[in-house]
Length: 202
View 1 (cartoon, rainbow, N blue to C red):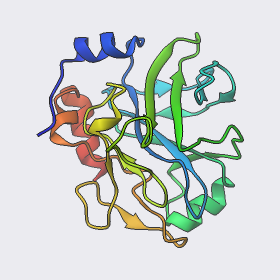
View 2 (cartoon, rainbow, N blue to C red; view 1 turned 45 degrees about the vertical axis):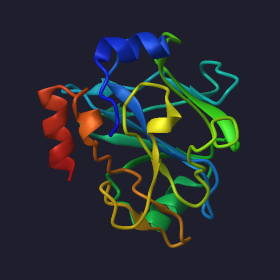
View 3 (cartoon, helix red, strand yellow; view 1 turned 135 degrees about the vertical axis):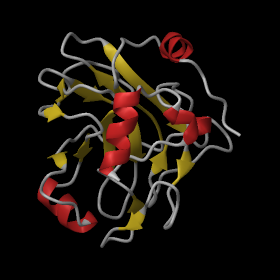
View 4 (cartoon, rainbow, N blue to C red; view 1 turned 60 degrees about the vertical axis):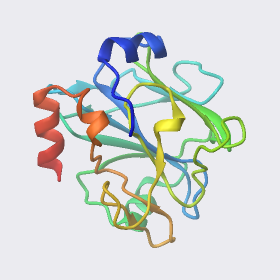
């Protein structure tokens, strides 16, 4: 059973700024290209203008984000062309995708999300060799058990028919990009507005 941590404890453990946008899925090596998903779990929209992503170099403004995330909405960034990724996964035109990022993830790496002021919003440090027994997202994405904790041990691999509603892409990768489904542990961290929005998306 996954430990449910308080919001205050999670914020302190990751050293992050207060925000309702979290890393909710990633695949470092897929047949159709790697991707990272960020989801707004709060009850109000978040403008991502000036926000950015980087890997373990952890430098703001390396890959700039854009768009407005409604409550419960996700943004996907991928090394693939955005429309090629959309077609491979059968995603609707409403799913926000930013393609063509080149600071590719490795087998052991880090995902960093920064706000418009360069503050760290969320971080995930992973690596099946560095953290024995943890997942290796090769051909299947990772899904969080506890949001914002920077603890890869709570993450699990996607499989068809899992609790996250995962499916296979046309490239035979398995995941659920664009449709975050919180686990019971993650639900404890969401406000009622964010929870309602996440459920509406299903």
